[in-house]
Structures are given as C-alpha cells and as structure tokens.
Amino acid sequence: MRITDTSDQWWKTAVIYCLDVETFYDSDGDGIGDLHGLAERLDYLAELGVTCIWLMPFYPSPQKDDGYDVADFYGVDPRVGSAGDLVEVIRTAHDRGLRVIADLLVNHTSDTHPWFKESRRSVDSPKRHWYVWRADAPPDTSAKVVFPDKEDAIWTRDERTGEWYLHHFYSHQPDLNVANPEVRDEIARIAGYWLELGLDGFRVDAVPFFVEDVETAAAKPGKGQPEKHEKNDDVVENLNPHQHLKDLRAFINRRNGAAMMLGEVNLPHAQQREYFGGDAGDELHMMFDFIGMQKLYLALAREDARPLAKALLDRPAIHRSCQWATFVRNHDELTLDKLTDKEREEVFAAFGPDPEMQIYDRGLKRRLPPMLDGDPRRVRMAYSLLFTLPGTPTLFYGEEIGMGEDLAGEGRHAVRTPMQWAPGPTGGFSTAPPRKLVRKVTPGGFGPEHVNVVTQRTDPDSLWSFMRHLVQTYRSCPELGWGDFTVLDQPNKAVLAHQCSTGEAAVVAVHNFGAEPQTVTLDLSEWVDEGDVELADLLTGADRRTEDGSLEVVLDGYGFQWLRIHPVGDVRIP
Image (tube, rainbow, N blue to C red; front, side, top):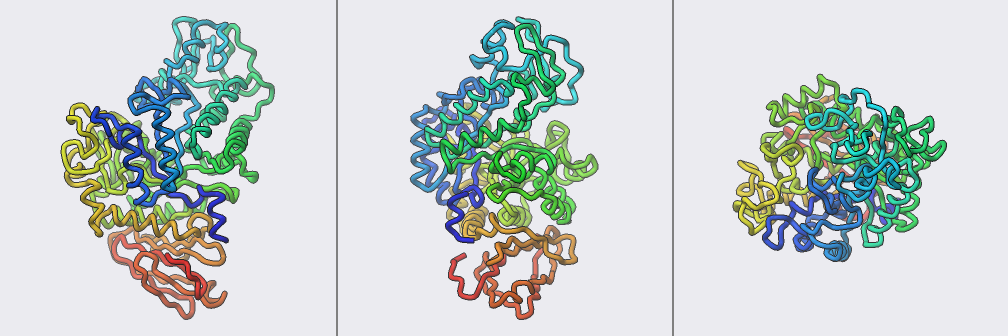
C-alpha cells in the first residue's frame, strides 16, 4: 500500500478521543466544562497524538440523560457555550491537524422537544407521525427495556390523547418515527447543518433502534395515523429498513466526501456486516467492536488469550473502505451482554464482584485501572493490545493517565467524572468549589492527588508517556489499520501472537495475558522466503534477527512486544 492512501480514508488509521465538554475543562469557574476550556486543551490533545476528537452531546437538553435527551438538534447548550464557540473549537482543532466528530442522536428526542410537544397535542397534529403511537394497550414489554432499573416498559400512555408512545430508552425520550420520510429528511438536514459548521463526521447513537425497529410491528394506528404496512409503522410502502442508513451516508458524503459515520451497533457479527452495507460497504464507515471488547475482558479474567483470538477471527469480512473501532472503555457502562451468563459471572467475579460495581445486570460501571487493581503491567499490556488490534483505537478521556471511577455516581456517571489535570480538590478541572462542580471528582487512590496530567506529562516513566509512545508508534504503522489479520500459531494459551500484513510489510504483536513469564517461538518463514527483510522492535528500537524464519520471543509476566517486518532498506522511521 502507499502511505498516501491513508489520507483518503483517514478513519482507518485514526486515533479517536472521546470527551464530554462539560467534564473536560472549565474556563470560567462556574463548575461546568465549556467550549472555551476545550479550546485551551486542544494543544494537549495534539501533543498526545490523537487525530480525531469525538464530542459527546453538547445540544440544549433538560439533562435527564446527560445530554442524550436532546431538546434542539440545531443548538448548543448555553451552559457550555454557543455555536460560535463550537466553530472556533473546530477551526482551532483543524489548525492542529485534529478532526472533530459529534454524537448524532436521531433515534429519539427529549419529551421537551418542540416536535414532541406538538405531536402529543392531538391525534391530528401535523407532527403526530413524527413519533410512534399506538391506540391499543401494549403487551408486557418489560424484557425489552434498555434501562431495567428505571423503566418497566417501552410504551408509555400519554394522558392528553390516551394513546401510547414508543421509547426504547427512558420514558422522557420518545422514539422518532424514521419510517416517516419527513423525519428522514429532517435527520439529513441536521447532519448537513453540522457538516456546514465544520464537523468531520458523526458517532451515530443506537443505530439498530432507528434503522430496523421490529417492536413497532405490533402497533395499531391511532386516529389520524395512516394505516401500517406489513413491516413496522412505515408510511411508505416497502421501505427497506437499511435504505435510510444508505441514504444518510450518501447525503453526508455528498456534502463532505471525507466525512464518516461511526455507528454504535452492539449486535452479532452477521448483523454487524449488514450495517456496514455488506459487499457494497455503503452504510456505516465504522462500527464499534463490542464483541471483541467483551471477549477481551473474558480473556483478561481467565488470563487466557483464546476468547479474544476467536472473536477477532470470527469478525466478518467487511468492505475495504470500512473499519472496526476498537476500545477498552467507552462512555457508557462496560456492557457484557454478548457473553454467556457463565462468562459474565467470571468477569464480574474478576473485575466487579460488588453489586455497586455492576449495572443493569449486564455490565460494569468501572474503568480499567481499578479493575486491574492498578497493576501497571496489566494496564500497559491491555493498552498495548488495544493499539495493535486490527482497527482504529478509541480512547475515553482520562484513559491516558489511568483515571478511575466514582462508584457513588449514579449509573453511567460513575465513569464520567471531571478530567484530572492537576492535584487538588477539583483536579485542576475548575476553580469553582468542589460542591459546585457538575460532577464529583474521582475519590481515593485514583483521584487527582495520585492521577493527573501535570505530574505524568513530564515523567518519562508515566502511563501518559507510555500512551503517547503507543499513539505515535501506532500512527507510524498503517498495517494495523489496513493490513490483513492473522493469528500466529504458538502453543501457549496465555499468549496472543497476531500479524497485520499488507503483503509488503507487517506488524507482529505478541501479548502475554498471564502473570508468569513465557517464551514462544513464531514461524515467520513466509517473510524470509519472500526475500531480504528486516525485523525491528517498534517499542524499543532494537534490531531483531532470524535466518530461517524462526523467532524466539521472550515475554515477562503481562509482557508484550511489537515487531515490524519490512524490506531491507525501508527507510520509514517507526
């Protein structure tokens, strides 16, 4: 491959950094992070080496769901700034070589959104069909709610009209009716608006819920609604559920040919391939690898690399323009829903045995370092693995310094604590008193007195310095984003040895999931047979040698190595 190919499809070799403006940096001392504060920290992100910033919701909102309950898709919440402030952030980020994407939340709205207010006024309201209503009482849907600790059904009766509206999430978040062409046009208009203001793409929330919603098949039309067709509540005959995603991608790339959509699709592999667009690759550009993430934690719990290796090998073939987004932690609960009950209990026992650490009976409200008891060997091995997995690594703010969680925080707020910039009661996040902060800082041993940017940034042995080294090394190895993935044979179940190859060069990564030192022998004869090649240790810079293609790799407990195989004379600097 040519290195210039990576600019055409930049998302395949990006390093994505997710942050919440309101918890990142407060510039005016009111206790809430803001866009001016983010602008002041863009040079920090550029220094770390990330290439794409993902902004969590900044839209006007009642804040019943941390901003995911949107009251205006075209606005900026005045608590964090204005649209002008956002444009300044985007322009400044672009000047530093950073792309910016934002959450596109088009599955539902807040119940305070003007559309829903109009929809619920009357069964004859012009906006009635913008949401999903039913006239008859729904059956028991308690098993289908997303948040079982807060809701007991996905339908709620509206007293004004006596009909029920659909909400897969909270009852204050009514689902939009994407089968309605007016709604689809409005979604495209929303995307087009933010692209015009400079965004480089979107992280698309809860994609399956608005692309293919089988729950509405049982809904009977209320007064004033058109009759439903065989599939869902379509107001257009024979609507292909995935056509909306295809149309949205085509629209976005007409407006900005380099823009991308990163989808949240936590489904089995076969269905994930559909959301990429199958052989055509014309739906989502990127998708989070939820299955790989969950099997990673099972592998860590067992100190056995095989569950992760199998998950990676089971990934379906996807279009060359598409990409997996890999992650260790994200902004939601650490979901374990694709594990079996027994496997989930293993992970709970290893990393979250206390009920206060668990959430929704399917996940953990913890960050990685506390789960690994702060063991720097295991933490560094896990992040080394993240950056060598085939795909695009995605970081959640604070991972680069090893932030922990606040288990006293409600639900997902446990891992959405203020960024820890410096020692002190507010962690350098704000000059406001701690009681006025938008959220409490992380307490205890992972709090800002022990974990912060200021201390780590100038320490060559810190986690921050290590993460920066990983980022820079990853960015020098396009094989990790573009190459073909292979698990290399070796007999030790605690070790994962894999290769990402473009045919011209390859990165070989070896990771020991166990506490005991291991020595493995790798067969690299295919490269020796091809001609003169060199081996380089990417993390230490040392040269390695193999005459016959056999390479012995010695690993400490939780040790790892990155090796690059390239033609003799290749002058690319790792």
